[in-house]
Length: 333
Image (cartoon, rainbow, N blue to C red; front, top):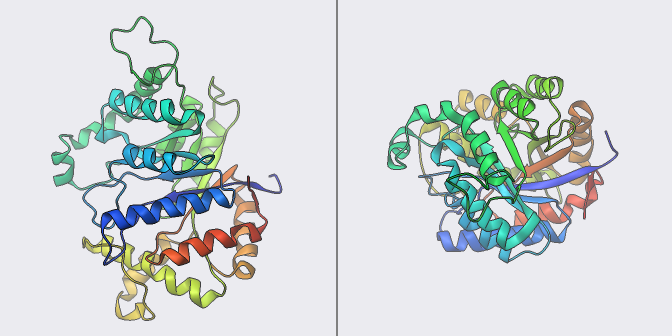
């Protein structure tokens, strides 16, 4: 592994309790600008539906706004849940982004619907649409490529943009697909780390060089929240922990305020579940986080790390990004 690797940021565009969606989006723009200021490589957003605490449902629309408010940082989806869409529509949306922002645009694709059955019906999709994911990925690659001149259907805009496509996953399915297609792979270790080692090993072993990539490229996701001291970071991270508990309970709501007393919120079983799901989390001061993160990077040797800080307090998010260069573990631009 190189001494340093690129660092990117994954955002859910949180809507904090007591804030409007417009206010949440304004904070998201501020976060993207901070990420760019401190030299991060990419700023990605994730598609979620029917969740009042997340404002990135119309992912490409919000990405366009982020692109207009930044200058250098790459913008992209991490990811678009392809079973929710026709490949042509995504080709047109991201082709439009490419027309506006050029080679700054990335397109990460996920197989999970990222929503419940009722929402899936409202999207006019069926659960079985996920079974077509490999074919839909290849159709989307076709629409964005150079070979559609004689096709009766073309993506305008989109054709010949050759926007970089990434496969997202948390299981062997996505790892195998990315390897077979010769595409870069992102593992969702920030909330589903159970198969991390097996998935990236499978991807690297089965990778086939392609016109897109000549060797495997692995990006791992992690929760990263830096603060001036451990107590402050752990306090603000309780917002993410509460959100995870609510999600598992089937509860909805905006991004919760942090708390000093998680024990009154979660059960022992829920705490174990959250601790397991969020085990790839680096929370604390620079001094506390740096050796733990260095050990993680040495163990898995990713080509890039993408981090998220899904918390209530905007000042805490901005401070975490401000402290990131002090880790000295990343190639910052």
